Image 1 (cartoon, rainbow, N blue to C red):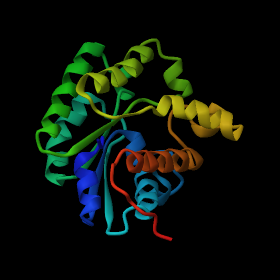
Image 2 (image 1 turned 90 degrees about the vertical axis):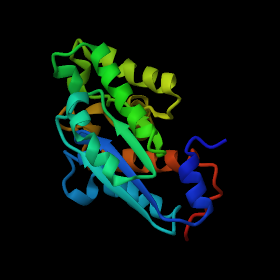
Image 3 (image 1 turned 180 degrees about the horizontal axis):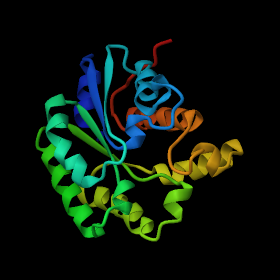
Image 4 (image 1 turned 120 degrees about the vertical axis):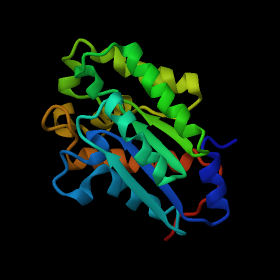
Length: 212
């Protein structure tokens, strides 16, 4: 059974797909040296090889947004009518004076609103970065995102663990991935975008063939 049934059906039927990345500075691409090196362009470029009938990745990321600000922008995402929405959050909420329970409740409500539209959903949690690790509230928000994904039955992309594994695999430091201590640089966005794109493809049940 596919984790992304709508996307799987569309790929099997040879239809173009629309994917929305909804979140904060990671989705926006802050830290990249040029717009085309940010997350959304890397994801779209990587997916083109697997989705030759067409794929559009919509960037709904605004730096500094937490759950409250994302809720205010939810109508924009609903209007996008994306086939798959990847929700990314749990970072900026750490600095906001709200309890983690309020973050969970707001995020749960928004995800359930998105689900009622019939789109597929995925979730991505916070990053492994110096500024986050140094904050006393971070662990609670970091752990809240995968717990909510499990509760709602939404596939979860574990960015935190992946970043640690990339440093080990490519002999990099955490600060090389996030030069300013928070945002990814070009290499980090490349690794994240390619990994996220391949994760999306892997979670479809469609026999998608790469375009050579």
